[in-house]
Each structure stands twice: as C-alpha cells, then as structure tokens.
Image (cartoon, rainbow, N blue to C red; front, top):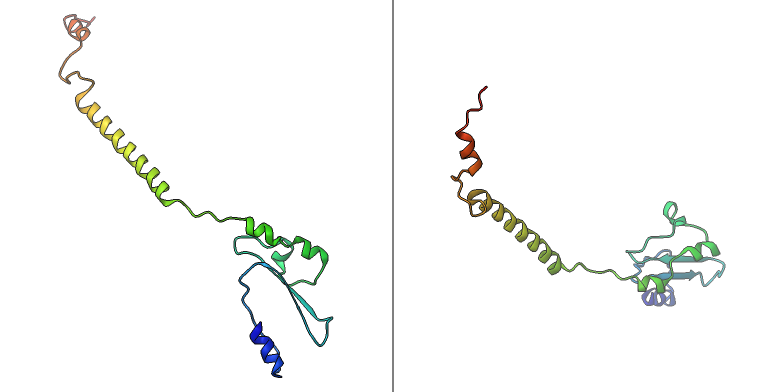
Length: 136
C-alpha cells in the first residue's frame, strides 16, 4: 500500500490495483475524493470457513449483519493447527505389526508342535475303543 500511496502522490492515475492479504481481518478502503465510495474486504484464515451467507455470493453489500457473521480475528488466532506426530504414528503401526508377526509365529508353532504333546500320540480312549467291535 505504501507503493500505491507514493504513485498517487506523484500524480499517476490509478484505476486498479491488486493486493494479497497475508493476515485475516476486516479491511476498509475508501475513495479520498468521494468518501461515500467505500469497500470492505473480509479475510479469513485458510483453515477457517467463510460465513454461510458468503458461500453462495462472496461479493455482498455492506451491512451490519454481514460484519457480525464474519469470524473474529482473535478467535482465528486461538485456532491452532496441530501437526501430526509421525514418530508416535509409526511407533503404533510398528507395534501392531510386531504383535501380528508374534501372533502368526505363535499360531505356527502351536500347529506344528502342539502343546508339548507329540503329534503321533494317541489318546487312551481311542486305544481302548479300537479293541471293541461296534458293528451291529
């Protein structure tokens, strides 16, 4: 804006200008020659939603209700964006994968060797039943 002011002071005719707003807030622009020509621009933080009335039509006439709907700059500053803790996330994923691998290993060992009982042993009730003839 300082550059724009210096160009106007030098007598250059300014018909249009553009500016990128870096901080949220409500900005008012007024024509020095005609104070009734006023433009109010509301800027919100990229992570904050615009008011509902501005979703369909971002350009509206200035009303008290429109300004009330606009988010408060203080509330936007209090809104914190938390970055993910990747070390914690990868630690949890690693622990889950380790638990899965341990579980698969335990199941494999259990199926191949049993609970300390050899696979070839026969229970006593089967040996006793094999001596009987159950054919009628």
